[in-house]
Image (cartoon, rainbow, N blue to C red; front, side, top):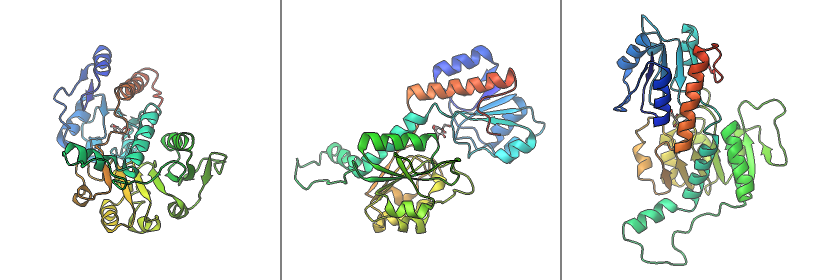
Length: 318
Ligand code: 8YV
């Protein structure tokens, strides 16, 4: 039996029901800790999402039946991977299929905050637009500027490609774990020190995973390194940014603005971010297209099939 913790696209749910004794979540209410523990006791596999806290307590619920946790999504910071390894539970994710959509959304946020589209839209909707004026809602040019990319996996690379070829941007890259041979190319300039990238960039876009090492990677000190005219974009994970420090920086004008798709305690948003004028706030939409959510589900299914088939799921992370 497979417990599916949230509603998934219809085609994915149909395929799950066809192949497995699947317990779907028709009401789409996130499961609490007790329900997740019950699932681990009853199901052979758990198909979970970012809204499930798959903690050590959940993974060690006794007597345990689950041998597999299939995550619908690429980020796995909500799953205690060390506890899974210790318990002999395999964990998989869904890399690759959401790269383009997430990169597109990072660019959308970058444009939205620089060109003040949120403010403009609110003005029109409120019936408060007095008509065109030469100095109204002037934003910042994006084309030709310098973009700093932090984290150079699939999504970071896709953002670099868009920025370089779509907007003629100069692209700087920093990664905490550069692949062998990584460095400056005709497309990007490598920065070994994050602080150097922050000082030089007009825009900074985050694409690193959330790990204990990257928690609050962008804190008050790092925000002060950025230019007062620079913008921060986060489509990675909320934990990578100290939200309180970011709100302070936005209110104080230490940086020019921010575009956020992810938060430290979703769905809660740090209150002082909500009333900062120069911030665009989205509700974790990175991979939210019909095409990608279906592809994510089918990829999760492929991992289930492989685990219960030859025992070798393609996207194993633990
Ligand atoms: C998902 C994401 O919507 O894949 C990820 O890491 O953040 C999003 O694309 C979410 O994680 C689904 O569980």
